[in-house]
Length: 190
Image (cartoon, rainbow, N blue to C red; front, side, top):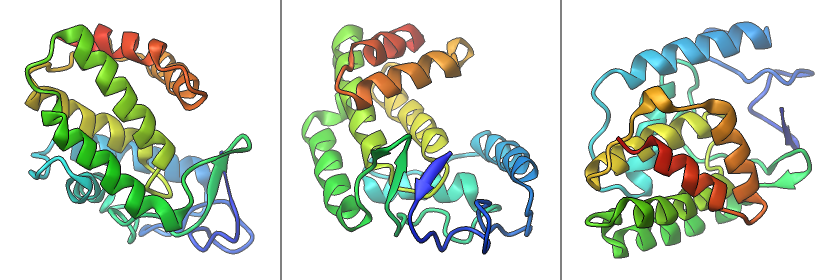
């Protein structure tokens, strides 16, 4: 569960996010969100320049049926287990910087798998710290990253994806150690 201060995204006296179906039960919302974002991920995904605008379009595509703010950066400060994510007033600048670095690195094209995995781990780690959206960051990161990997010539075998391994690796990367995340990515390259 995320910690958010003065959260206009939730129903009054609740931690449930305001949603288009007006679901007030967290379990029901999570089930609907998972079902619809999974269905949307199987559709043609938005094309773009692998920049922050493109990333936001992917979030919008995945969550358009759930939240009116799908695809829009969050406006509240958030943390998880006391670890703060990027403050909302810095999301735009930090995302612009990160995606400019990605572009300068030729979107990781023409790299050997190990080098790709190392650079991609750093990118994903930084993208996670930015945590641009109020909800749906992990699913958007994975979907966008799969598109990026495919574009770079390193398609991912998502049948090998283990959510628990990836979560542990993302947590370690948040704490500054990206090695486990690089290994997890390397294990997904088809």
